[in-house]
Image (tube, rainbow, N blue to C red; front, side, top):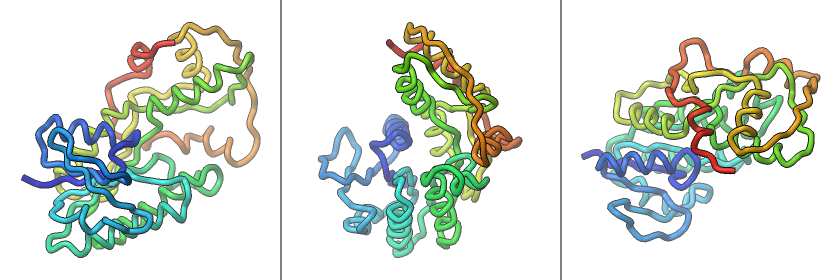
Length: 259
């Protein structure tokens, strides 16, 4: 049986990956920053991707590495990926390195918008040049991340909503399933984008959230100027035409929320 190592296994992306691998009875190891005992067949190995401490031990025997760990700091993100690649290169048989990235990372949003996007571009390039078998999956925003933003905005008495901007959020569990599918298949290189089934204007996402949690807030359309707004209005954050789409909708996600 192929041993799969998951980095970032307690985070938003990695947690459902770990759960599904465990449920499928896969041989599983999770890189953890804190010392943790083995739990229900999951082997936790302590290590620090930023410093490289313990990473050699974590990758030992792994045939698959699903890299879900990340940082908003470009320097830390680069260090984490570089240390993981260096350790993986030392293995007798090179493991299949699978990483999650974000839709839009290659469309200038990193320089225009968020350090997170810039970090994703840097890690993508590092994996591509690693010499390891690799697959990269770019996904859109997760439903639960969008819900966190909506919850924060719902505290305002009047919610300003950028007009002309759409998002196509996706279920984290479906992203996890796609990552696992890639991991146990042949290295795919850059896989097609992965997104939810529907693109929504931001106002519709907020209205859906407010309705689901039983709140009533007026929305005020606002126009965002500049390069950021033009890029996003042009769909820089939306999946490419050949994207793979999940099945779970924003409405189905909201049905499980409580006020």
